[in-house]
Length: 631
Image (cartoon, rainbow, N blue to C red; front, side, top):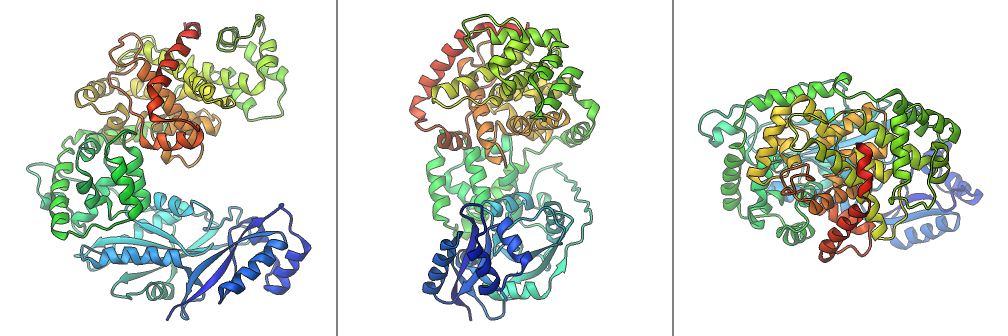
């Protein structure tokens, strides 16, 4: 029978200094070895010790704090059969998933996992790091729920069809774990099934711990062929070993384009019948993809907060079947399978991407060398007269507002600084790499260039309006954010042209249809291009996630700001403005953008958006001469 005990979690050193008192306590008081102490100090958070009483735990906590450590006290559940304690909040989450399975829709696989790192592992970490749980869930994918136990143990909860005799998802889990953890770490995992192997959390984990084996790092063929010919029925949709609810959950997670639009037109009650069974991270992803002003948001936020599990079995079954048949009906074009495969292959080829000039490549190298001199930077830029002229034009424009004319690149470097000049050179150099004067598949080729420059301008406007210190990388990130569109125009002009028209007919954002038709959107293609050019990571991340910043693991704020500037430009120059708009449809601002922006820009309110748009129009008008830089 489990009992409540308390654990102390070490969160680091107060002044980045290991005091003699703390070192002595760790060695003599807790019996830590030198390696244990090293891991504790270098890779927190880590479990320090357990105490049977809360008073004892708090006293030890105070002692460690006095010795220079930072600790937190957590309530846990200790079972005599397990050598470790389970945090009470983790046990509650596991029981919540068990409750879902007990309703009889599906069975629950409980996978107990642990990480063993070698002594020379250079990628040490602690699973207790903030956000690691959600990162693992994203990487493992599907409907899996990850629950962290301590710095090296975690549990994966995965639902599967009640009609399946055995759990068939272990190969997929193993593949994900192999990708996530370095080869110098060994991952052990053991499987237990609820309720066959236990009806309590400790019993299920104990059964899994008894049957652990290392994950074999082997590739797996996951190709799936589908048949959507003829009239759709559940029998034609569901494959062997699948359940209707499993498939429905997958569709909720992966729906894009027409599917996602159809879902967002359902009632909150209908959507929650499916979303209610998914992990919180998947629920939040669905929420953050909605337009910021969607009427679904308040009710969905409340439902996620309450974590209420739908329990009307009859209605769930009916809606599951209805949704599956409707959503599967959108998959009626087999030619898209070949198109997606072709794009995946093209993205693997370096020659699919435009090549940067030698000058811009040299500037990229300089950007990665903080010790490079201003003279070296000036010398490289002077080798490209057109690039030099573009930089001098913008330096002498109203955008910077310098009273005296700047007539040399050396002077520009001194005035603006190394970082600003590098970013401008990267942006303009990359833009001049491609001639867009005549490209099929673009609604307005020249309007795309104007849009890129306008978005870059509006990044500066946003910072100025909210009195934030300017970020030198913003302007360049704005210039490069839609480069992925150029890849689609170069390689698939006719398909992309048709997609523009369909975007208008269906009133669906272009990037959503790109994901549905191509299997990838222009933003993520921009990530491939940026990586091939060896651009700084913030620029690559901004391009990749400017439409969906909530998916970014790093630089989400920069991506959200680029997305906001993108949105403002389309508000300033809507589709009916034939000369200035680069698209035929309006661009939505997602709730994910809004949440990230609200945390960064204090005082940002939806009621002020019209005023912000008017200010953006004025800012672009004031800086109109900048658009002449591109010729």
